[in-house]
Length: 338
Image (cartoon, rainbow, N blue to C red):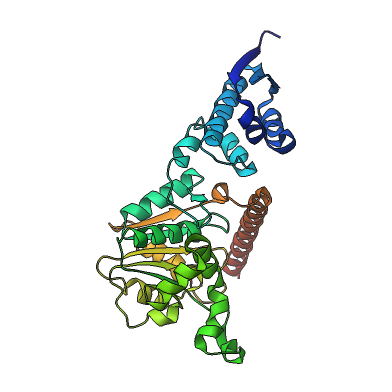
């Protein structure tokens, strides 16, 4: 019993439910992971367990209390991320990240980076002219870039916003869809519209769109133009060809900023075609004014199950890659024997 210690901290009643979670789910996860027992009584909590684990639990609970006092709702993602940071002794990073508010949605919800990877991504977009944001779905690549674009537009740092993505899914079937060209490509741009509506509001967005200050268009529309004083976001860039990527990058003019986002594990190009995103990230690495940020499953801010799905696919892809390597080695060895 000599190894068991007891730590105490104040927890105001108005923050207890938020910090502990619904049915105490947050604190139960804390107890299971760190091997401690947490007891709440009369605005004070006791943490019992091995000294290092108690210290970690106190740090995490204090971080959660501070987040709650700032008006944040503590989520499962906060808990999982705090526990992973605790293993690296970086617990205080959670409240540091939370101080960075990009802007607010129409409903007043603050848009902030939620992980160290997202914070690094946001910081680089602010500093650099061109930033590549690569990573799996749910890491906030596009949403954070669009929030920064809208904030720059509101602060008169740029004159317009241009949001684009390749509509490769349309392919040859575009002609079979109803409506004019804009109506045909709109379904492929819908995720961008949804984010704009949430942050700006539909009326404000449509008003600026009519004035030509906000443009949401397929990548093909960028050819032959020079984009000055604009904040440009190229989404789903893994589906660009090297030629399209070069065309896009050479459109960027004076006073402009560009963010290129994509996930190189989700390439929809026909077999044998190279991804422009994959190639550009290699060619442009190390050039001043350009940065490449790679987000991982640790930066996923959707449901925890999404993180598990991404991890499962990553493991599967690694196994398949190893199998391919082994097959290639065997076939090359067999060829030499012949």
